[in-house]
Length: 307
Image 1 (cartoon, rainbow, N blue to C red):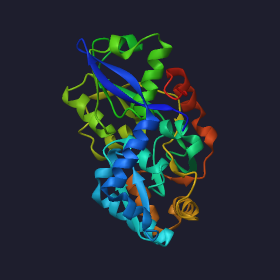
Image 2: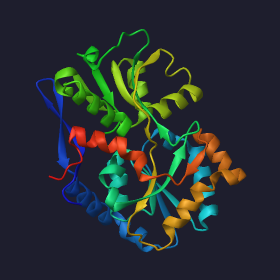
Image 3: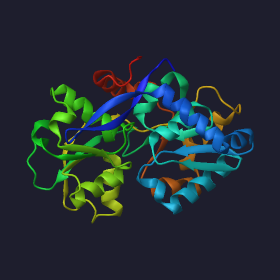
Image 4: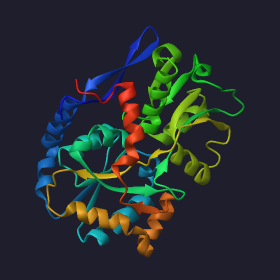
């Protein structure tokens, strides 16, 4: 993995929280060892069950969605499917890269960093395009023209490995010659886009970085939550969080099964039901070039270089 760096931890210093890169290879190997010790070896040896990971976006606490997605994937793949969820993106990526998952719905940020270790399986289509945007949110009526207008805020990020919930804002700060530890009074990770919305809505944070797809869908299904909030800034369109699989399959043929299941989701009543809950049009094969914009931000911020 070439010593690539991705995960950023929060360190408190003089009342602020400084963001520093950690060696991701060591973290991945460490998490893999813990997972094996916890019994993942038994799960890996079970070649009859397909293990599919979900990062902690707003959808993973929807039991109806999880049940329908599991049911659909089991029927479409012709094998029992186990949905694997974790609190952080990092944990899912660790399991995926180490081959302990057959596939996962991840984010474009880790996909870019681990592109040589992963295979792009499918990309969601939302509102007619395989792309989404990052939103910078705050309270309604707030004046905003540049990132400097956030000076003194407590700012909520979603996850240190999230494109829309972290990377996009960091890249914009670099473009405007600002650093989070000097701009914000404090920052924290809410570990979930819906949690970012809740943090800003409740006043725990004055601003936040969030997935635009999640924000818009939450506005549809929970209109009271963002009622007093506003989108201060929308990023350019970027590749939608993709479905990915390990570049080297643990069980041959699993990646093709997962790809077909997602690309054919709109062709069955059960699949359309899942898409309805996700508020998505469907899934397409997509191209790695969809994520070039994210790759440029990774390079700009310096979180994906070889150390």
